[in-house]
Image (tube, rainbow, N blue to C red; front, side, top):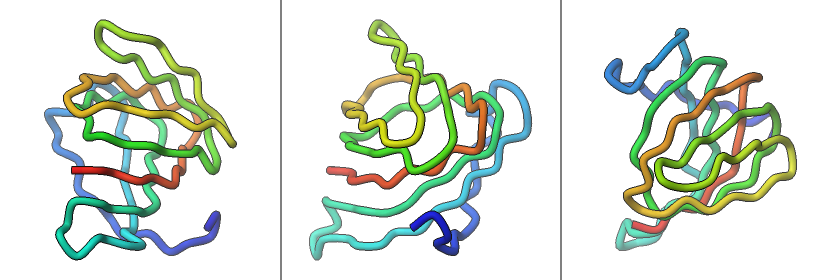
Length: 106
């Protein structure tokens, strides 16, 4: 998985707080009803704001600080597992290109 070929995923310019982060990813599996998605996602250094889906992810490589509005500040790196809830408003400060394996429930 660390060497998986990823495809560009355009980032809404309104989400970029600072820097010039680039997002890539690849869906590895999707349920027949489209409500469960598993894949790989990567972002280069910078700061972005996002509104989350129900997601469980494990960091494969890189480091970031994830600030959840009205919630915790998460310092994540390789091997860390995190859960984000649908509607969580977050601010990601990516210190080193971050790659994660994820499972999203819609």
